[in-house]
Image 1 (cartoon, rainbow, N blue to C red):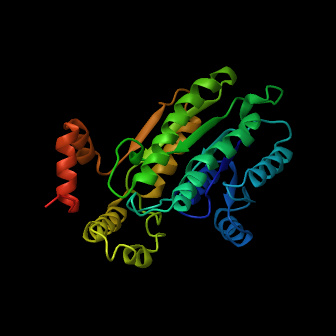
Image 2 (image 1 turned 90 degrees about the horizontal axis):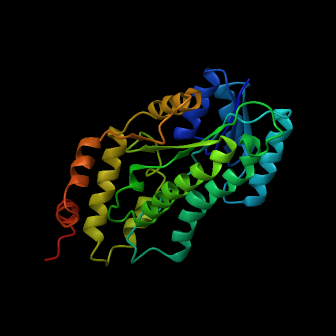
Image 3 (image 1 turned 90 degrees about the vertical axis):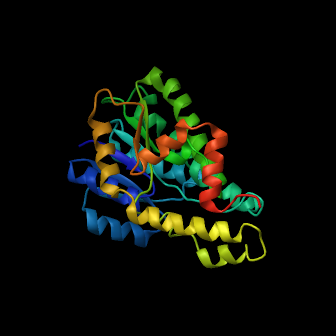
Amino acid sequence: MLSVVVTGASSGIGRQISKTLVENGYRVFGSVRNKADGKAVASEIGENFSPLVFDVTSEKDVQAAAKQVEAELNGEKLAGLINNAGIAVFGAIQNLSAEEFRYQFDVNLMGVFHCTQAFMGLLGADTERTGAPGKIINISSVSGEAGMPFMGAYNMSKFGLEGFSEALRRELMLFGIDVVIIAPGPVKTAIWGKVDKGPMLARYDNSPYRKAIARVVGFTEGMERAGCEPDVISQRALNILTSAKPKTRYRIDVQSGQNRFLAMLPKRLADKMIAKQMGLVRK
């Protein structure tokens, strides 16, 4: 039975990926933040889901989890590592604290680094292990290719993940380990719903950004409702793992027409259109 590690398996995309892989014959080691989450996910998915309790921001905990997986593999290679764990820090650059900005990067970038480094040997960098080299799938975003107001921290983390993935893919050709990006647009998950909107909006009560922030919050809620189902992403992940020659990047975007149109425009024109839509036009 082939084995895959999925981070951020407690809910949303990671939970659905774990479920889809188990249904298709894989054993999944899924990272969760606590034992209660692990028990709940395992109860839903079945005995071929093994929870790993760790925080991706803790290098020590990630390395301990890798040792746990290694003990279960009996010298075989991992078939895949899916770096899915991520958060969204929302707000104007002028108002975000250094701690908020740093936490965005600790999860979305350093978390990927810790997991990639810890599991790299199991994927095939340790050439003594048996089986075919595994694949690394990094869950990025359309926000890794286009910046939007009040999403600067999130944009920066996803732009960084795109560059990291490309460099990593070229390094790991030596071991036959492939690296593939899945870049979703809006998804019906709670990534933006986890943002505590009351206190966040309150901090802008005396800010010129107040109306624009409220408008963008409304946009994000609407996009989540209209987003793709997590199963679309989980099926893509399954296809990547089973494909001999996957593409290097897959974009899954229910707003692809609008986003492609914006990408074709001169930057200054796109700036004006976005600013007008979000109420950021200078009066």
